[in-house]
Amino acid sequence: MIAKNTICLWYNGDAEEAAHFYAQTFPNSAVGRVMRAPGDYPAGKQGAVLTVEFTVCGIPCLGLNGGPGVPHSDAFSFQISTEDQLETDRLWNAIVSNGGSESACGWCKDKWGLSWQITPRVLIEAITNADPAVAQRAFSTMMTMVKIDVAAIEAAVRG
Image 1 (cartoon, rainbow, N blue to C red):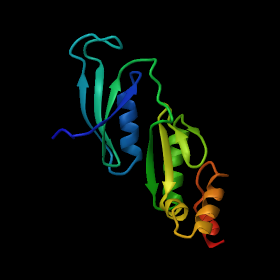
Image 2: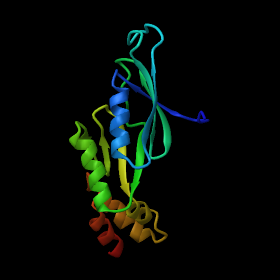
Image 3: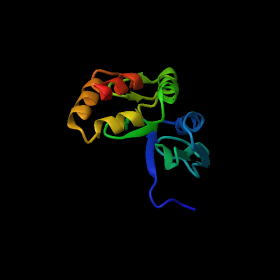
Image 4: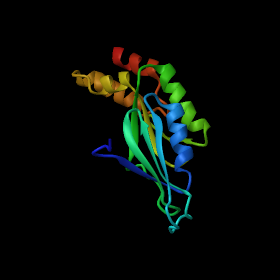
């Protein structure tokens, strides 16, 4: 069955490598059909991997080997909700240690330039707290972080 909406992500010849990394790293993720080009195209030759169907945490995606010159930007990111510090650390470290880079406030980039928000649920609950003082403390604490520290967010909630 073809999904009604699929996220298409542009890669420079390494869509299949990225899809396998995501499938090995994130829960409820898998690599599906790999389509090889039926003819030559600007970024490749007949028989080269043209597209890769995959899911990331249940979200259908298509990796397109479109060639160089179209980099990913922070305007698009995956936000992955984590249950605890252990899961946060595992996902963050997998991305960063595989050629990625750290950013701020729970954001990092994978080696293909795709942005990820590794976001513990406790953070979302804290910054959307009905008590504005709690939300402000949690938000201010988050703004000082690179990778989110669950214990520090919980401490900010407690005041």
